[in-house]
Length: 520
Image (tube, rainbow, N blue to C red; front, side, top):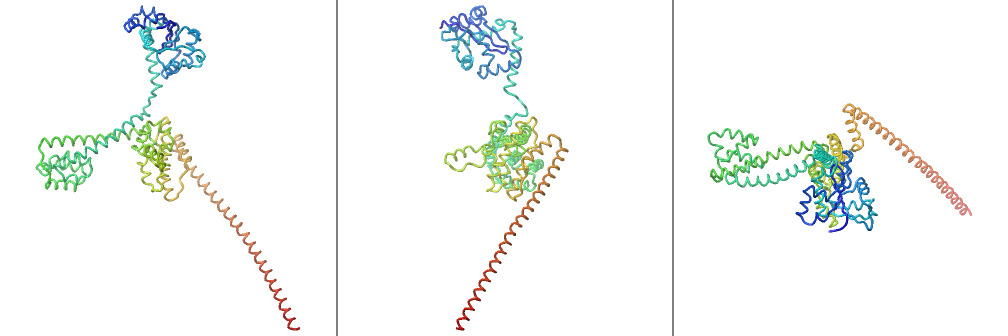
């Protein structure tokens, strides 16, 4: 193998350990030989000796160091430990350092303390065998390390690391929302397919039923109850008719079904065929009931995970946005322009490729706000709604205990914007609305009412001041307009008088000259 002295780094929950390998070659010659050398403590302790040991000081230090190791990063503590206990490195250094993780070995070599020193780092199967042996005999190799202490240290470190890695919070369980909306979409597809199959299958026996009962779920329930159409007008059919009335909720519809059953053109089914049709229909009914239960669960979950977003655009659309973004945090970090076209990526890239018009909306098109807007205002309202969705998602994501107060006022703002597009009535400013909600959450409803009253007074005062200013400005403008007009009129009259006098004087002179000529 090699004649270089070998040191091996071992990281555990208790601290950092550095081992010196005295007979590296004999351990790595063959697998069987290596395994025997690792499992037998007497042979292993002759080959591997403890060079240095640095225990972690507290739980915080342990969590930080374990996090750094898991991210393949060399911390300052690890660099100081290696620098203090390894021989000086140089061009002619006759030693090497074995590290299990090759990425960690690269990070150690790139650390600022070892940039100038060229440490030879190795990560091989033999190093892994040595570390495995150290792990087996750790309590014997490290002083004051018992088995109980090792287990306790590993358990505490594991819990601390898991807390920092996962950071579980029941209010942020958006993964449940993502899985639920995906399951709902799949159930909708399956229910649609199965209902079509039930209609085709049961129509061989009772074809008139699908014309009377249009709803797929109601049709499946009615078919599962009726089974053989002859049971609707035979003896003991009263109970079945009562249940059928509960399903349809319409007495006339029940009468139409019974009348159609009496004159049906469908074929007769054998008991085995009817059993299979009924069995499949009952499964469809159970699946539909589960779908309703799942929708209720989604609504309850959204009221915990994202109450403001769900209040603004509805549970289903909000859940789809979270699912498409990947998480509530990703949705909160996304700009409003991204939220606006979320779900329309294909159309966006196609438009960019062909240099056409980009899409105006994605998943938020399913919101009732956009469907209620006029065609010419759909793009504007979708942009405005995406902005409000972005605000709501950020409030939900970064609030300690999110409530739906912001979602309610954001929905009111969208309604005001729709009214503005229709009638021109100016909506409230966003900052005033947000301050009012924040004040209500800080001080309770009474304070909120006081704030609302004071805000209304301020608005009225501002309106009066604006109106007075406008009237004053209009009066001044009118005066300014009338003054030059009068001056112009006076000047014009003066000039006309002068011209008239001139004409009169010229006319008088002309008559005098004529008289003089005639006298001559």
